[in-house]
Image (tube, rainbow, N blue to C red):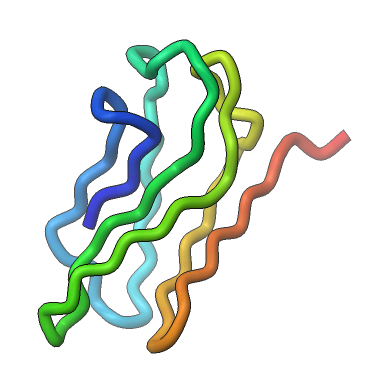
Length: 85
């Protein structure tokens, strides 16, 4: 599984089991300096490859502090949360 913002900035996970949670920091220091969205690429147990895009970053930096991705049988949920004021 790969979570990324561009070709330079990505997190790769070997395998995530059902109901397992993983937390990692996406260092966007080397990210492209333009605007873009985050991508999630993975392969289901049946071998089907899936890809989805969500969220938004600007000037190479994140507007959010946390991204939660939940993979369900028929959909992928991406929840973005920023700074609480």
